[in-house]
Length: 109
Image (cartoon, rainbow, N blue to C red; front, side, top):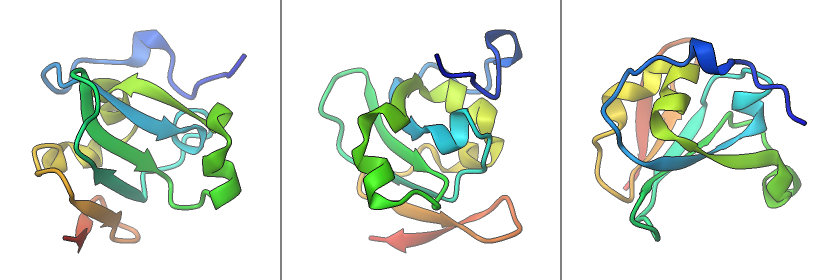
């Protein structure tokens, strides 16, 4: 069983219902900040398209599906509120955190 950094009583409604997203355990278990995120065109109706990473994950870590999970987008916003201003960006965007800040820079498209 994974021990998440936040428990369910710590999750507050920060954004309107927006669907699911993918995040790694580096964020939800280890409590690291989001360092890299992108939004792909969703494949399922309830998928927001957002994918969140600390930026420290190796390819083998990412390839191991036990190191990530699907979460409500609001849950991940609770882990790192700095993402909230960027959530309405269109599909295809990739963002990287500006080190030492709560801001992200656009790296694609």
